[in-house]
Image (spheres, each protein chain N blue to C red):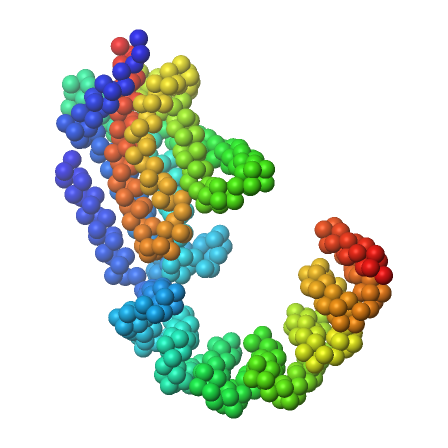
Amino acid sequence: MSYNIRKNWLASFDLMVTKPIILLPFFIVAFLEGLALEVIYYFPRRPLADIFTPIIRRFFGPAYLHYPQNLILLPELFHYAQIAIYIVFGIFLAAASVNIFKELKNNRLPQTATVVKNACSRYIAFFIFGVIVFCLISLLKRADTFVYGKAFSRIMELVSVELNLERVSQLLLKFSPFVFTSFLFISNIILQTFLVLTVPLMIIEEKSFIRALFRSIAQGARHFLTIFKLIFLPFSVYLPIILLKTDSVRLINKTFPEINLYILILGIFLAVFVECFVIVSASQFVLDNKK
Amino acid sequence: MKNTLLILISILMVVFSILAMTSEGYDYAAEKLYYRAMKAYEKIAARPNTAMPKKLDYVERNLQMIISRYPKSNVVEDAHLSLAQFHLGNQSYTEALNVLYDIINTYDNTVLLCQAHFLRGTVFEEQGQWDKALREYTILRDKYKDTPLALGMPLYIADYYKEEEDYGQAQQAFGQAVQFYTKVEKEERGTARGYASANLLIRAYMELEQYEEAGREVENTIKNYPKLLPLMQQVPNIDRIFIKKLNNIDKAIELYRSMKLKTNDHEFLGLIDEKIKALEAQR
């Protein structure tokens, strides 16, 4: 019997609307990201410049200490901050959210102390999982770059040399960054298909980290299309933000430099709902499979 | 949950306020003003005929603000020069000259002063006052002779006379350019400035139709600057001088062969071989 994805989404959406407490851990992540963004936004100005100037000069060059180049660098610096927040707090808080989900599904009022205690007791596992996910995403990006590079060169050769379609090759070059970003996006979702059930399995089925990880991979392989469809649409809401970040230099030239800041703020806000929806859907899937 | 959210949002706002109030952004504020002024100026420059007075005022006002409010910022020199260029672009020559005069009397940055003198010369040229323009270019050539802008001045002056069809003055100016570049090339041989002087010297000889001397200078340049880029840049000179003007194919082949000994770059060696082959077929 095929899994009813629509029913899962409706149940997840209903839970988020009727019991918004489940969003709280993700609001805390958004708060941490907001704090990081504020600090990064003010890095070219004293007193933060005293700390950041040597670092930026060393790794990125002195040009990025000035307006508007600091705003071109903003998304990259924020990305590094997001990685740190994800590994240190992100998985832990997602687990707290799954704990809340579990309590709500058992018709119990989630108690903050209990939720935090349960999440804290397995913090090391969540931290390691965060590191594993980050490493896998980095490896995937390198693999994607290699594959895409080869495919794109071949297509360009075909279009511009063999078929001599000048206009088409110009269009391909123009839209290549967006195509690559979309390609990377889909690859990430494929990767998440195998990993997204790990935290729900650890909390709901009370499995150890290693068992939960392997079971998540196994479930991902067994129900690949179901889980992929389950998380693809919610994550797609975030895709326009990712595409806007891809060509930020051209966007700045066409509009104004602060647009990067506004896109990042919008991204933080959207991520609260997207990430929460995905984790709740994954938890619901685990719960339905358990039955 | 609502209370928690309110606390989190309040903390974010407080942190933002603290950072906004305590951040000392003197240079940053000036950079922002400069960027906005230049962005607006770019749009005006792209469509000068449709430039509205409001937009022009906006550019001028922002640049003036940088000069008056942020005189010690890292963009004040650029802002001052941009203001002069802005007035020049609007054909407000008196204002442009006043701003350039301020620049010359305020700053000691050599590059900026060179540009200021050059722009003053340009303004005087636009006004048809060549003698005053020549004075500025001469100051630039003699007082700031170590700068790239000054290096181009002798030929710039000679080209002016050529365009005005004052061939007598042009010949004299090209002759002076030859003396100037010969001296600089000798003093700075082996450096980038020496190489630039050598190229300008070749051009000056070509303008004087002294092709033998030009050819000799090409040969010296190949000998004194045996790096790939200078060698590549002499290829058109060999074609223009030895083949087209002097009709000395043997010398051209000899020079190409000497180039081959000075480089390992396969692509360039392939090009030289093709050239030699073509010339031998022509002989």
